[in-house]
Picture (cartoon, helix red, strand yellow):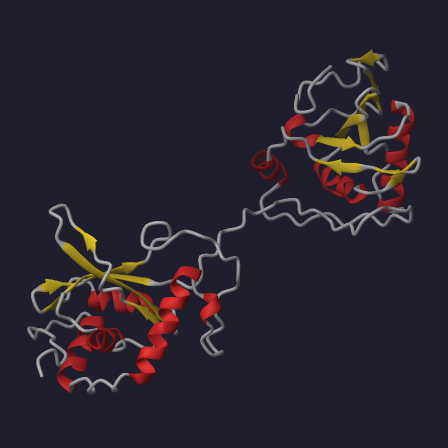
Length: 324
């Protein structure tokens, strides 16, 4: 028996039997590379390779309509009678996409499962067919089918994990810096959506000294590059702040939440933040509500931050009311 993933399965051996099945050549067209032009069919009732190939060719012709290119869509077929699976070699790459529309179609009372084999190479398929080429029209088939069939895309883009809104990682924070002052410093570039500053959970450097850090989230993500440019390496007290984009898995647990990004026009919703930061940010919001409003930023400090953001030189060190 030949494994279903083997691209070298002997299809079309002069109409004879091969590896427990039969091969049929339909027409004299040249075959596609098996890694892009082969289709895998399972859940097949007891039948013959001729009947199966003819049925699928009829469904392709019916679904494509009168404007189709004459000839058989399926050039070769292999049917394993014992394991009830088949391989189809298609005429062209567009029909490799269209034949997937037959997934779930009833054949002798059983729904066929039509898919691509594990040997299928998507990169090669896209390269041969043409990057950005639109899909062919779907098949219009009146035959009965099972399940809520949805056409499978020709190119399946990998889904990027959603770790929530983009946060900034702030480190090398002075030990004497209060949370209200850190918030005031960060908000010089725009209002914050949330701030997580666990002073009781510092990281450690190579010598074992504590490194105080924080995660912050701006209401407008466009502020991030400006804030990084203005705050990174800014000397505050005896330390130089380090500010960069937070890295999932390094600065916070990389657990995808698979939810849309926060709509900036809506009110902040803690459920959109990473679960392990949700409670901390909620506590922070409660603390802020009960905490006295910090003194306003001195005009000179705001001017310095604005200069930093616009690459204007300055010799002033920002202390931001750190000494009352």
